[in-house]
Structure formats: structure tokens, C-alpha cells
Length: 212
Length: 191
Image 1 (cartoon, helix red, strand yellow):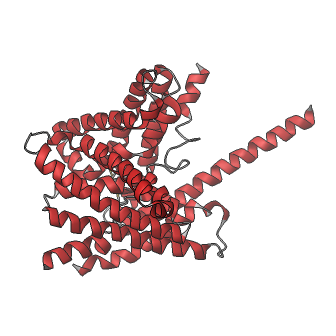
Image 2 (image 1 turned 30 degrees about the vertical axis):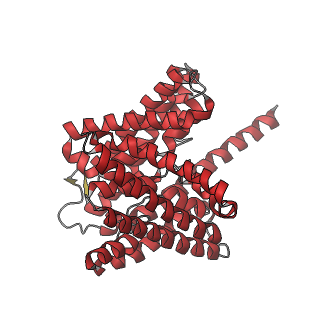
Image 3 (image 1 turned 135 degrees about the vertical axis):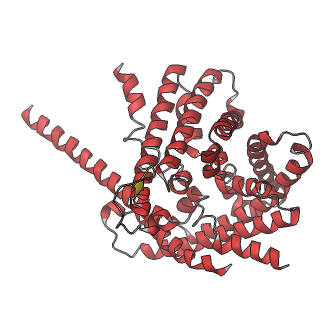
């Protein structure tokens, strides 16, 4: 049980696809102008990465290693097309807001990386957990960025005004430069936090060594 | 003529792919540590994008659309661009080894990259004619090249700067890109 929890939870913070691995940044910047867009992209990616991990782990024994990358890419592209068609049919407004970036989910490095690193070597259940964990970490990161950008850039969250009438929106946060600069600081924050944790672990180890 | 010029300038500076549309960021941040590599990457992306746009345009308007298979666009384009880049790599390796030694390594990196896939998709989405697609692809590629070369020059200067520890590496690169993007916003009023 504990091992399964670890597989799932490492994607949330310790190996967060956006802040730590710095993979799949294009969507993180492009569609996080509002919370709802960020959430849609996050959920779509979670769906694609989980399904793809399951598919890859099922077929892994029959795929010749020489052609594995094209096989994975075709599988990802098929799943993305399914997601595209579903969104187009049931949520046309969101589909429009995602624009070209929805189709570009196909080439997200993180999805191919999980298939290659994890799903091609592990069983179905573990691959499912790994994909789901990574997807949740991705969604979490998208939400963090989107909440900050929408809050300061438009003064709203999910379209609901937060700061009241007198708030002058900080337009730069919605525009591209704001996204770049915000991610820069968030990456720095994540790095500091990780360094602190490591320092703590090191100190605890030293202490334990002394007592022994 | 004016129409094509507008499209071209728009793709190079106003709607710069990297700085306003966030495409190709992985290579943008990965390669821009080194100036000469950035020049090579810019050229490789421009040429691959132009050729794959032509190919994708032909496939879309002569195969997918007449057969009513446009919902397969994503799958077909991914496979098309990825296999085209692999093929190109083989041909260059065989026919022009000198060129391969210079740029071969970049070809592999762009085989499945968002910017190479995005341009053919945008072309068919906006219903551009073949000539327009080519102009748009060249413009987008040059825009990418301009952005990555500027960024690489900035990062070479950064070596001598005293950057706070948590921001070192990718953090400061993002903030630099933000500043560049801010500068490129100034072009917005041009068209």
C-alpha cells in the first residue's frame, strides 16, 4: 500500500512535472490566463497521461523496442483525438479557448517521458497510479499558476470578483510577459523549498548519527 | 503582395511563436545556453517547419479533406512530421555529411516538438493557400530564430552577473524571457 502511495504522490510535489522537471511548459503558460482554462487543460492531460500509461503497460510485451517511440506517439495521438472530440461535442466554449494547445498535448514531453520511463517497465495498476499522480501534479501546478494570474490580472477567481470594484487589474499578469516572470519566481520558490527539506533531512541524519 | 508581407512580419515579430504563443519553449530554454548552437537550431527549425508545412498542406487538402477524415488531422500530422524529420535525417546523413555534423543533432530534438507541429496545424486551421502557408512557416521559423539568438546572447552575458541562488539556472532564464516578451509586446501596434 505504502509503495503504491509513493508511486502516486511523487508526481504531486517531489517530481512535479512543471516546477521540478520543467517539462511541458508551453500549456502552463499559454492557457493559464483563467482558472477554468487551466483546470480544463489539467484534467485533459491527466486523462491522456493516465490512459496512455495503461495502454503502454498493456502492450509493452509485444512492442519491439526499436519502434517503441512511434507506437507510443500514435497511442498518445489517438487518446488526444478522443479528448478533443469529447470537448468539442460537450464543451464547445472551452474547446475554443484551448485552441491549438489541445492538439499540442500530443507532443508534451511529460506524457512520452512517463510512457518511456515508467509504463514500459511496470504493470497496469502501477502505471495507472503513476500517470494519475503525474496528471494530478500537473493539474495542481496549472491551478496554482492560473489562480495567481487570474486573481491579479483580472481581480477574479472563476469569474467571481474578489477584490471589489476599486481594483485596477494588473494587465501584465494576463499577458505573456507576466506568465514568464511568474513561472520564474515559482520555480525559484520550489527550489528553495526543496533545498530547505534536504537541509532538514541532512540535519536530522547528523543528529541521529550523534545519538548513536 | 501587401497581404503576404503583413503575414510574414506578423509571424516574425508581432505574434512571435516563442515569446507570445509559448511554443517551442523546451528547445528555447534548453539550447539558448550556447549562441552558436542557437543559430544552428534556428536554421534547422525554419527549414524543417517550411518543408513539413508543405507536406502537411498537401496531405490535408488532397487526402484528408476529400475523404472527410479531418478528425484524424492530429494523428496524421504527428506521424507525418515525426517520420519526415527522421527521413530528412537519413538523407542528410547520406548526402551531406558535413551538414549533418553541423545540424544533425538538432534534427532529432525537433522530431516531436510543439512548434513544428503547431505551424502545419495553424495553416490548415486558418485555411491558408499553399503559398501563404509557406510564407507563414518561414516567418514563424525566423521568429523562433530571432528569439532564441537574442536569448542566447543575453544568457552569455548572464555568466558574469550575480544571480541570487534560488533563481540560478532556469528561474532567471524565465524572467529574462519575460523581459524579452515585454519588449516584443511593443511590436503589437505595428500591424
